[in-house]
Length: 365
Image (cartoon, rainbow, N blue to C red; front, side, top):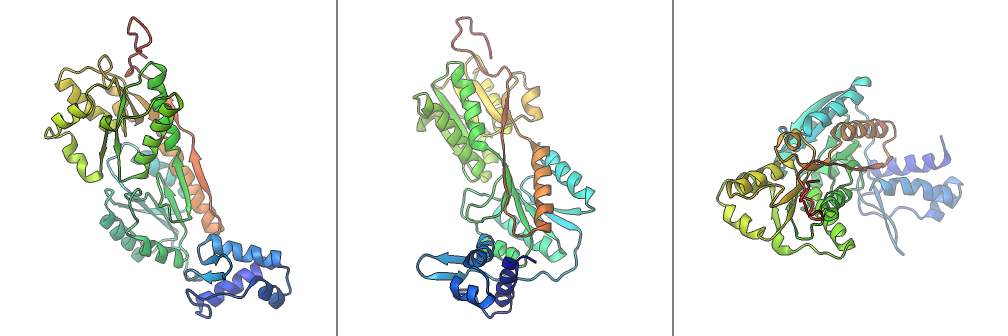
């Protein structure tokens, strides 16, 4: 055992048995160095690992304090991993699950699956259900990650139990945990630049406001436009939440949406589902895609390929995200202190949903 592991293990045991309670100050680096006969650098390495886990927190000029409990794992492995996803009928879902199962299955793990429908109360229920059943780790798609995490105490309990946690698609910003995501800012840039290259300057967007993916995709759109001296107009942006989706294109908001997007030549849509619904609304009012309005989207789902307009859409690497999440979980099961963040580079699938405004003949992209 390395020297720093002696100190690390001693601190864990003292925190676990209550010798150092939450909020207590632990011995200083000098005191621990004298106690164990090791260098301050070795002590600092041991403390740093506990800081990375959130068990200790350093206060500048005051010392290092216990931030939460350190629980020693003493249960037998269940060979089961809990998976919590937001939506069962999402086009990306089968690829993600297939990726997770393909990797975990090679190591004889099974999965226990729960769906939240992107509702925080459902997430709480799912977490409690899976924990009650017993799992060795959790792979979670965060719920409403742009909003405050109402299940923070429950996640703290999970970490206190020493259960490895990996997020996919999105994650909670106040948790220093492993995650795998697509670079949604870069994806937003790619989609918007495709429009700009074809001469579009009057660009609107529909984005989801309660998930971080929506905010990041909008940031990418904003960044791409500002790089060429344009700026998104608030008039041409529409934000919606999970609960708004059933009503967004039900007909009651048609006049609002058409008025909001009056004057645009192009739209960036949060995903293919939104893009297809918008295309149908526009067609009902004799507005053609791409001749009147060009559209780009995200996910590159089957919807993008079968629509007559052939959506230009950012490819979502569902299988790879599932595989990476499962590999991160296996890594954390072997080394609980590791913290890895994987950000996958997106690519754009170019089709004919963009009108080329730079060509006099109106040739499509």
